[in-house]
Image (tube, rainbow, N blue to C red):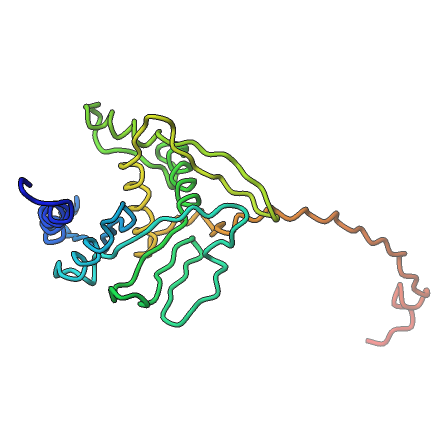
Length: 239
């Protein structure tokens, strides 16, 4: 975008990239049509937040597009799922929230716990193909793009941290690596969760609490009841 500043180039890029996809119909194998029901745009990149909010407000798809921001919530922090819900706020047991409108931009912000969701994504990668919850790519050809995607998806590592009865995998970027597509893939899963998608095999484990020790089973022994000869054998009973 020659001659455009950072904000102008960003706005033009969003117009060229986002708008065509939001207006596009995607065909399923059975002939059904789908369109994008939720689009999240990272609003925490440098000093571009105002440009992102302005685009969301003016793009014509305000019911579909939302600004989002990821937060690293460690073991010493309160998980989102345990926040006290405020008026107009949505809090999910799967560690994301939609904050109420309380800023000058008059746009709701989508927030999520990056540590929880990056761990969720890793579990999808480690699930065998064909099992529920597995993550796989379409096609069987390895291209430069798939190699680049694989490089981004493997750009971070996790360190397990325990504190205050919680155990959390804290994710860190490897030196000299880029993670943009990794962030996008994780955000896509968060957006799917907000739209109602979930794994049947999963239960929310957002709080990261350490499992409680299982109490030993108590065995109560009782002496056998003693009955008189009449009651045991029905002697003298009337019919």
